[in-house]
Length: 101
Image (cartoon, rainbow, N blue to C red; front, side, top):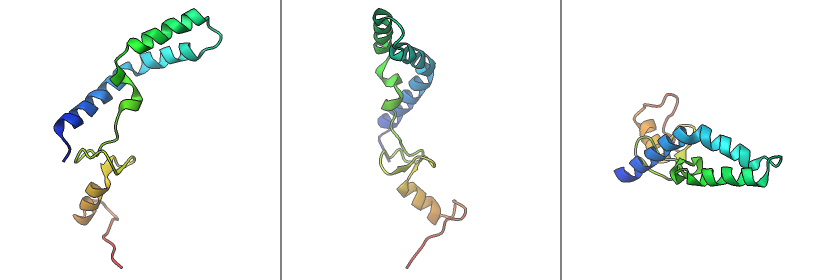
């Protein structure tokens, strides 16, 4: 089980990212638009840098929803390989059976 502080920190980043998503997108469009003046783009860049760092989508860590484990997480399922194996052994995932050879 991961530290609760790490899980909470990641959840905070997710909330911040959702909150500032549209604002960041709008400012990034202005910054990348070559037709606008350099001064206007620079002001947009400054506003973008004033936003909280944790509101950036890149700062979000893929964590297991069950254990909070940061590594070996399947993106589609949002659970770690270890939790997936455990659920499979318990028979909670339809169609998944333990293999042996």
